Amino acid sequence: MNAVMHKYDMTEDADMPANEDNTLGMQVAELRSDVRHIQSDVTDIKADQRVTHQRIESLRERFDRVDEKFDSVKKEIGEIKDILASAKVWALGLYFTLAGSLLYVLARALKWL
Image (cartoon, rainbow, N blue to C red):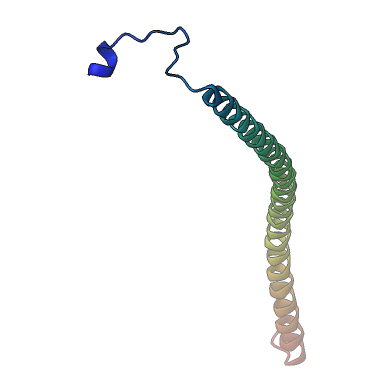
């Protein structure tokens, strides 16, 4: 609390050593170089993130195309089911016709008719 209440004199005093300014300047220069290094790292990370985002978008487009293909396959399977259902009806009709004609031939051979 005392440090906050104490008023500092910003004029240059005899108490301040001459090499302290040089040391402070070197520390500021080191901090600036560290900040530049961090900024370059952040720039690299952003570039990598953009590339990753593009890859994810291309994968999403591929998945959309695969979904479209699956939808078309589902539609074709539905059409095949309809065709098979109508073929079953035809096959059943042909079976009854064959059975009836066989019974008719058998009845004529045995002179039942």
